[in-house]
Length: 262
Length: 98
Image 1 (cartoon, rainbow over the protein chains, first blue to last red):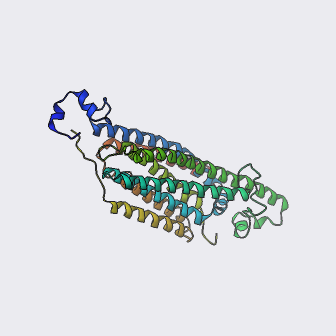
Image 2: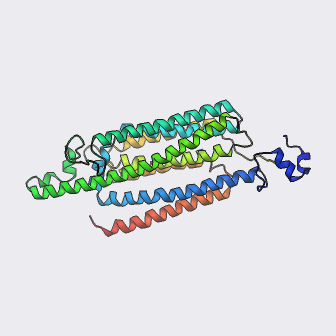
Image 3: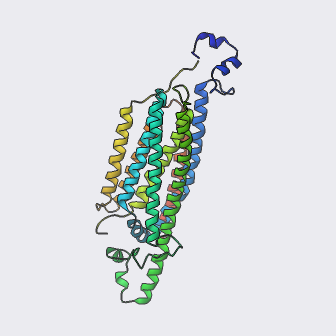
């Protein structure tokens, strides 16, 4: 229905029948849209607190056991981590381009961008799974045949031995054993945080992929118009937030200490 | 009645932000392999904060929104987060020496 002055003069009930997306308890579309967006922002505020607590715990132990955390961080694959960050950034781009396509009323582009978003999101999860698989092979999963000293997942080879202060203990087997036990426990703590943080992030990604599957279906059905595309927009806010969490996780987990001589 | 104050950003802006984010990601990975002493962590966090700000301002539309409550929630959430992090780390940072 077009917005003619005559519509303003009609009773409220008729007006709402003319605009099915507008719920009766809102004055107009603008207010309805702002209320929905406000709700999502409020939720994201609680999400900041949720991840903030885990980040704080991580930072406290990272400071306390810095050498062990640095050595364990170096065992993460920097190239794969960087690539995955880029994949996630691409998914955020396709989300904003999908919202823009909705604003312009371009349904084909909207669906295309949303399908790309799902593809990038699933790729991120696949790559993350590959990284977790490597950690399993290296015996770097806490409490599950965990071993940071022996085998291919050894964290005390080469420069690391010096970095962890093991080279000074070579003549004192008792102290060496004690230090190795410490390294086992403290690196295990790093991986506990690693799996908790990346796991929580991945859970958010899985939920995001679920939400965007529904959104893509709605877009394909032509639900979103330049006048009404609030679900797409606030789902986008959630997606970008999950992206931001990763933007901080990547340097904090992968880049603790990558200096060559250290 | 349905006045449309919604801001539609040019797609070029989104592509530009995307490009900057990719460059910053590669930069932060590369810079971590250079010895800057204690500044490695600082640089990594500064780059991450720049990236996050770009996502919030442009991708999440905070720069163009007319809704003041969005900004109020954002600022208060970041404020509480900093309260949590700064006060707790100031405590733990000075309690255990070495």
